[in-house]
Image (cartoon, rainbow, N blue to C red; front, side, top):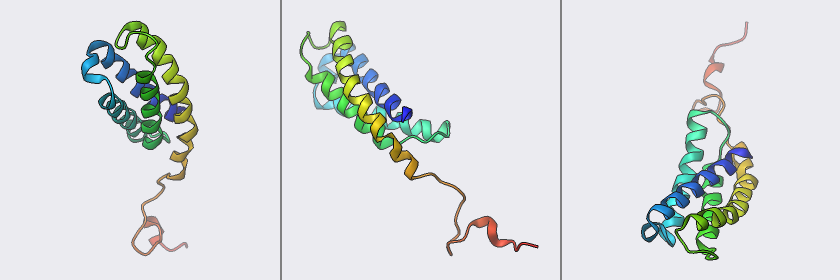
Length: 129
């Protein structure tokens, strides 16, 4: 789904931006964790505020994979603008695809009406006339 891929891409962009500004802080596992948190929180925000089916797990896993690939691609000088573009392209290829493939997880949980403790919906207490 689009929301899983978009959340993964947002996490990757946050990691790339942080990596260009302060590579020593955002390199390695802490960069992957940062991107994972941003990707998951982005999907959660989409689900909460935009009322769209978004899976925080899909966003987090996609962002984690994308940032790992971007950090691991040491083709160019890590932390440079060239690295952000090329490494980001490699990371986006992998991570956004994973986020989009895992996106339908959000469709498994779609809250409908509130349920009472006996299993009936809260609005069904009225008898039909």
